[in-house]
Length: 380
Image (tube, rainbow, N blue to C red; front, side, top):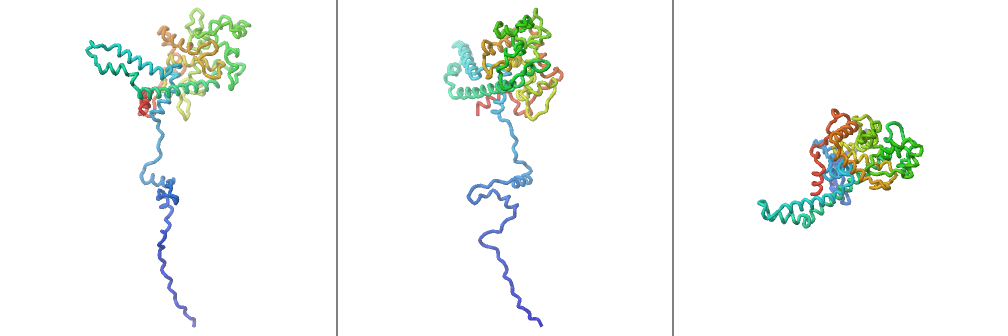
């Protein structure tokens, strides 16, 4: 008969009193805000953020939004091409404020019914005693001026690699240019030479077998007020009426198209839209029509000269005088010629007027003028 062993009761386990039971992984993630062993705050894991989004229905991902400061500095990059190529913005602001104050002061007199002593004192000292506010304003405009120069340098830098492709309507110039150097440009290149001399000289001496030697020997001085050949649609040239075809040249139109839309769009069908991830300069600046300032900017032929860095002069030729001469021509020319020229540029740049669509910013809250944004920047 088998012997029955006595039954031994095992003790009931009791929970430890020194440390809690390890929580599950989910509770570990949710309590990740507790500090680490060395006292540093824990970083919330992706699982924690995902769970929070699930429970609250809201995402913590912030959408990048352009601030007024960024908008102002971004718009400042278009000042050289759209407003004035050579303006010194802080100097212009300072001079304008002083001039306005002086004019207001001159108009005041004790016999004027609207005379106000306090207003007179304010006008008299507005420049001398504006102190920190004026200094801060000028600091802001110096920053805007730097961004305006940066925009110009960006335009000229990109055109260095592409502008020579636009000189001729068909084909590449020969011999080809070295994109890494500009030494072979200007009058050193036979085809570029024919574009930067006056149209009247090209018409008269262009077929002379010694023509290139005459130009290199500086028999023809390049002056800012001698309409250069690339400004013309040469098929329309009339020596008896040099205004015909002026500022309708193929080269500057293509240059402006690249500045506004980029090199790929410059050679595409007029009016077509290229798909890209970034806005072009026309969209950023809200440009949907051509102005005389833009035309003069595109005609400043720095891109095909020998200069490696931007400068006002190329030997005796003044780009600034050339730029101002074009603007003055628009001011003094016949109104019909002005409208015809602007319409021509708009059609060649944006397409026929019926196809034009106003370019607006995606966010109406940011759709403000550059001046408004600059004032906002001033207050920061």
